[in-house]
Image (cartoon, rainbow, N blue to C red; front, side):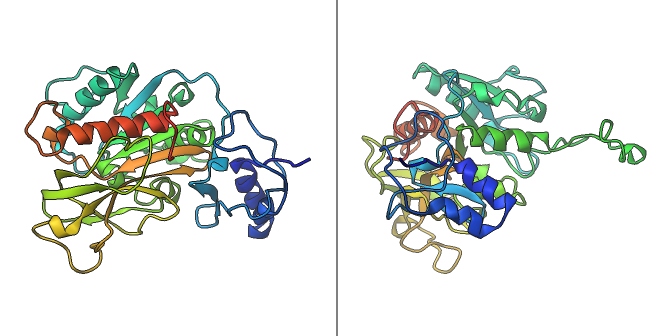
Length: 342
């Protein structure tokens, strides 16, 4: 009788010993059911013969398109998502002015992205909470997905909190400034969903775990804000019914380049008026959306979404309806409301 494995087995063994012990989790063994695990699985040393090695030694996690990386550890998530739009650097105009502290603070018509996500998901019967308050990234396990929409820089740090050097030796009085990082990571490890939109790639540059959550990818720069053709390159529940469409964006370039992911959409650079011809331009394969399992959870990301009109239903913005369909499909799949990354 085979013993099944979880992503937690891999990360725990690596911490206890070394890479060899973690890779021992990937040796031959019995059979696996298709699709994501539906109940928590006991850890163990065996995988079926010929099973794909789904352990990434760069980020010390189980990641990729293998659903065995998923951890179904929380069964009572609400049909609800949390939208996080905090910025600690450049702020996209479509986010509107910074929000006051708290959960679900008042929005104005200038908060285009927030209003759009609330409306679009409401049409799907999904509730949305929103915040830019890092101290409200608690009780995340109630949500089926957490959405980072055009966040920027170190948004998981409790800025503006003074630390008393004299109290540094006393852990009870020393300020805990990065609690949100721990909370997000534990949420993902328990089977949470993550959606990154546009400048989510310009966030937490110096946090390797987050870079892995983005698919081993990070923002490098972008070209001109211009029209280009988006091609759907991956059959997936999040892209179902979508074909190629024209869109306008900045067309982010990535360093490092995403790996171990399922590519969903690309921009055809031959349709761009000012095409990049050297690195970090991505030549004939320039992805703009992809998905992966990561450290127990689901991650769906897209670099699209620079312009406020893209989030405005009925606007004349090129590809607005298709962009909406892509975003809604991505969120629903990361929530687990649709089959994920397949």
